[in-house]
Image 1 (cartoon, rainbow, N blue to C red):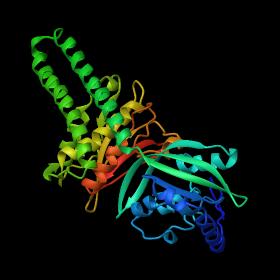
Image 2: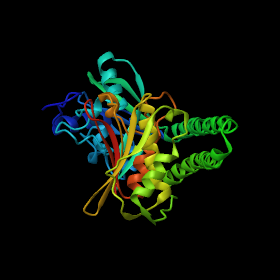
Image 3: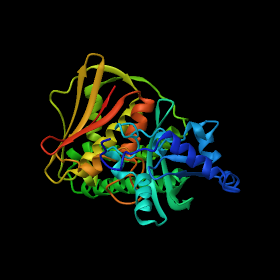
Image 4: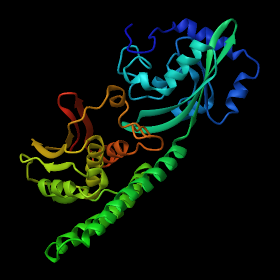
Length: 372
């Protein structure tokens, strides 16, 4: 069976059952496993579950190990990428960057205990659910057969707090620096221009409030407390407002933000606060990816009953980064970043009911978009 990363081979149903029965005879093994408060399972040489504790079964809402026997971990928890390839969990291109699969493979290769962090995108009741976990793979020999003890600890809350705190202060400082620059310029302009500058200063102050609002929105979204407030809007007016939101940030210096001349002007209904958050994050990413003199283009297209808002920049996303976009806590900007694309996904899809995605290529650059 073909694979794009880890071996795709699987054990027979008979071998899986024999392994399970053999492990079940180990005195107190089930008692020890079930005394633990986090997920523990034992994998065979093909990364398939042959034994597990009740925490995994409760997490998956199943009654007996037979319902996960022979599944790989990503398949058991319904990882978004576990079924992309015929070989299952570990065999897709995305799996190259999975902390869980890599920890298991490293443990099998070296015979050493291996710990790694892993970002998980799983489907729960038709909705994407994002987790940050710490996984540990430990070799275990029984009846001359080498197994892997695989454990998982949910660190989502820990990562969430660290990321939000870091981003909150980072982004607030970003906008505040723009406001500071505005006041430095204000004293040197003539009276005729000051009225326009007052409006710009008010816009920057509003951005600081918006950053605070963003963090609150994400927190509410993750706890399912966010309410959607639909309003009648105009596509072109809305896009022009977004284009003006970030033009005075430090990251926008020397870069051109333009609205495509072909952008359509039609009325539509959406939540302006949430949609603005999604598009602002797309624009921020484009600004951070661009260099001095480059242009970021915003546009909106209409196709039937669908509207497609997009933000384009001329930089190409490297393949390894492309495979991990939208993962919670993943970022190219360093530790304790990585919530911008994640927030696009959760706000744009789970609350606005749209489709959030992107295209990228060396020739065409990168465009993030939301289809409503």
